[in-house]
Image (tube, rainbow, N blue to C red):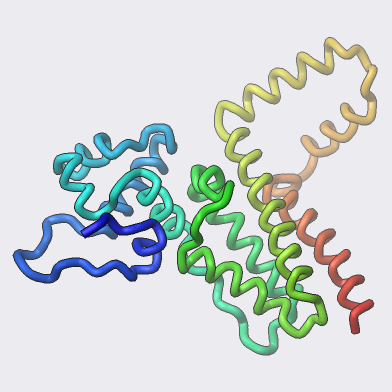
Length: 237
């Protein structure tokens, strides 16, 4: 029997033998352990050998469930994304639906920063990731936008959430301290050449606690995107 393809594993269409004793490993358990590993140490730490050691099995035993790292990371991404937020029902307007969608997506990227890298390029989509697309398209149903316009809206919102999550991840912990120190040094070296830059950063630093952070940057961008979308929707209706 040939090894299952990525699509077969993602969508559960591969048939596995049911005879014999209950297996000591499960595909879900392997994926969960792989996610725990990369959440703690990053995607570069993942290898079939390292994962097998954490599970207490040989590397060859993992290949009975997943043919290789390509298939494993596809399963990890879909599991990490999880299901999209549930729609509030027919009374929820498109703007509220998209706002909830992108905020939930941003939270998933923040929880699993390594997933950002795995969403790049041409690849098979799993049922959870497809569900996120379906949820956003459902929010836009009835707006008068074409299919391509609705898909472009998803790309735009997803890109905003993904790029901001990536930036926040790189600035977390020591990165933020390092940037603050380097920025002060740069402003000293610049000797007043960039007054607007200095003023803007000083105003942000003086903002009340909870203001000017990643969530504010996310919401500001989302609201501006939705403002533009509202103009287009009004033109269609």
